[in-house]
Length: 491
Image (cartoon, one colour):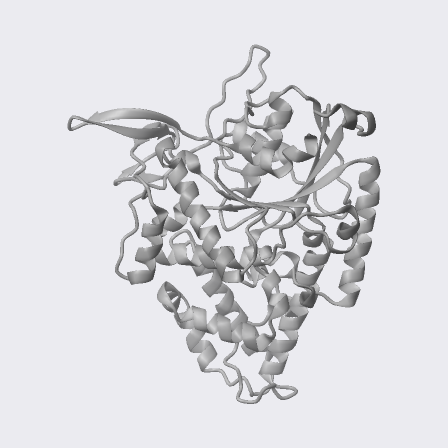
C-alpha cells in the first residue's frame, strides 16, 4: 500500500506490530497467510480443505515437504491474536464431510493457527532451525480488501467514480431507484438525518443487487454496506455518494458536509484499523475468484471481475522481504490468484480456465503498472465435488462430469432433489483467452461468451478407512497452491 494512504501514526503502529511479530518469530517461526476472495469464491471451503488435508494425510503429491516425508507432525494450536474470532474449522469440516453441505460464507475476520513439525532438507539448516513452522491463516471478506483503495480517495472522488460506474451497463438498471433519489437530492441543502438514511438504504440495496447470483458483479465498495455486522445503523455506515456541489467544498451544516464527514469516519473507523491491524501484517496472500460464474453471467460480469482484480492487486506490493526491511514496511511477497471450482469443468479445460484468469491478472497488472514478480495464477478446486466420465451421443464421445446437484438445482428444466447423481457436459472454454478479451472490447453488448454450465453440486460422499476415519477431502491442485504459498518456508 503506498505510503500516502497511511499517516505517520499508522506507520509507527504498523512498525511496532511487525517488530513484535518478528521477535516472536525468532522463537516460533511463523508465516501469516491471508485468505480472501470475491463473492462466493470459496474462502471457507479452501481453508477447511487445506487444514483437513494436512491433518489427515491427504494426497498432496506436489507439496514437496509432505511428499518427501519431511513433515513429521501437524496440529492445530491456539492462535496468537485473542481479540480475533477463531476460524471454526471443526464446524465447517463437519458440514462438508458429515452433512455434505457447503459451510456458511465468510462474513467477518477470523484466524486459525496450524503448526507443522518438519525436517529441513538442508543438513546445515537442521543444526539451527527448530524444524517447526506455524501458519496463521487469516480469513477475511474480499469486500474488505476492495475498501483499501478508498483510503486514497476523498468523498468527491468517491462520489464521482461511483455515480459514473452506476450509469454503465446492467448497473444502470440496478441503480435506477437510487440514482433517481440521488439526482433529486440537493447536496447543498441542510443536513437531514432521514434523507441520509434513505439514501444510504437505497445505495446499499443497489450494491446488494449487483452482488446477487443473477448478476455476480465484483466491484462493490464500501464493503461493510454488504456486511455491516455490529456497525449496522451507525453513522459511519449511513452515507451515500452525492452529486458533487459546484463549490469545491460543501458548506458547513449541509447534507454534503454530513456525508463527507461520515465517509471519512468510515475510513477511520473501519478501513484503517483493518489495514493496520491485519492486512499490513500479512506475509503471503491467496485471492480466490469465481471466474466461471463471471463467464456464465456474461461480458459485463467478466469486465467487472477484471476491474475488481485491478483494485485488489493495487493493494499489494509483491516483493522480497529482508528481516530489517520487514520491520518497517512488511511486504506480501507472494500472491496467488486462484480460479476456483475447476471441478465444474472437464480436465481438458482446466488449463484454459487458468490461462483466462492469468490474462485477467496480466491486464490488471498492466493497468496499475506494477511488476508481476511474486504473483502466480492457478485453477483449483478446494473440494472436488465431481468425477469425470464419458458418454456416447449421436455417435460421438462427450467428456462429462458426474456429481450430485444441490437440492432444487435445475438443469435444462429438470429439477434435482439433492440426492440423485447426474452427468452433465460442462462446455468448453476457448483455447486462446485473448479471443475473449478482443471480443469484449469490440462489442461487449452484442457478444455471447462460451456456453459453460455452472451447476452447484453437493460436497462429495467420502469413504471411510478401516478404522472408521473419514478419508481426506479430495481436491484439485490444492497441493500446488500449498507449495507456492509456504513450501519454501519448509525447505
